[in-house]
Amino acid sequence: MMLSVGAFGAAFWLRRSEPVDAFAWQPPLEQVDNRALVPATVLLPLTGAEAPAALNAALDHAHLENAYALLAYDPTLADAARLGALLQLGELYGKAKETRRAASCYQSAALLATLSPALSDLARLDTYLQVSAGLRGIGARDAARWVTDQAYLVAQHSPALRRDARVRRLEQIANAYDALGSTQLAAQARARAADAIEGAESLAARVPFSPQVGALPSAPEVEASKKTRIAAAKQLLDDVSENPPQRAGDYPADAVAQLGEALQQEDAARASFYATQLAATQDPATHIALWRDQSQWLALKYRVARGAFGVNLVPEWSAEVAAIADAWDETWDALARLYRTQATARGSTESVRALEEVIRFELIAARWGWWRGAAEQDLQDDLRDATRQAMDASLPALRLDTLTRGGRTIYWLVPDELYGAGERALPR
Image 1 (cartoon, rainbow, N blue to C red):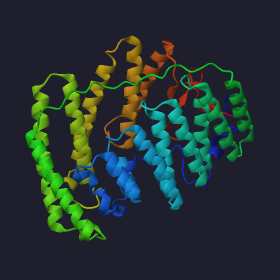
Image 2: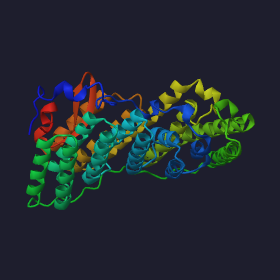
Image 3: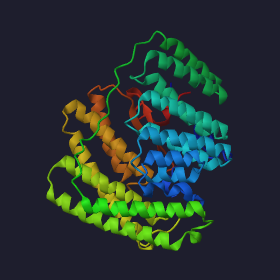
Image 4: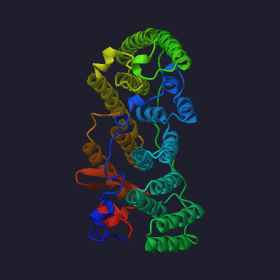
């Protein structure tokens, strides 16, 4: 089923009444409103709370901007957890009539569902269907149509869907098309669902590539400085919980200064630790552990430097935002090299699959704004080479492809026969 660009074209994407352009993209961390952060839960990541616990606390208290900031800055969350929170935030922002932020959350969820190598095709489909419903609910019908089309392609062509799941999702996609007024496509989807009842069963699900990560060497100075920082953060949290500040200037100056000093001391201890250990070890798995730990620390440092905890905790860092971003880029560069080396050492067939998955992970880091120095076009070229190898080897999977308009790119999943077809691959 191919789409005529003339029949669909600009009218689909560019209606002025739409609250979101499906091709537009801004990294989530560039959308955080620091002035809207609520002290009571925004400081939790600094107190030693794990990211899922801090995220749940923010959502439980309806501190939406706090939850969004954590999703934007923290790379430690699993994709499934990040996805679930984005869908929840999209719904909550929609109910609060914050239409553009709701649309952004839904758009981010759809992108993550498409790019993530860790998710099953069934999880992708369920995400697309929730995103389609959410976008329809806020009046973003053109964007909802795009996501529904993506769901239709996955439901039809995924080699990894069980028969009953394929049938059910195709029926749900038909309902989504009906809600969008696309009755012809709804009828087609129902016909596909009827055909799928007698279709072949799915292939066994594949376990995605996961890099081998070594153990972090002992770091007593880092641990000591971390405990000091956690204690200082808890003290500040206690203070602002008792007397909530109305603006950044109302935070208790002594507690802020104490936490800022603790953060600087921890940063110095970590910098010394990473430099010493990376020079001392030759084990790639240990290098991955070190670079990953440093990357996670620099994610937090970058957030502090940009004032994304609601207050300027370390003024010196705020004057060094670009340098901190460059240091963070260095960790992503190193991790990408190490991951690719591991991926390509797995044997011909597995290497191709693993390399594809590593590049998709890299694209997430680039799109989310964590890896600013990544050249997205180079990543796309690398992915295209890996995809061609996978297709030549007849490895069954949907292919990550791109569609570009006006210099802006969207990612989507297509079967082999539609790879590279651009807008002609869209259902009609």
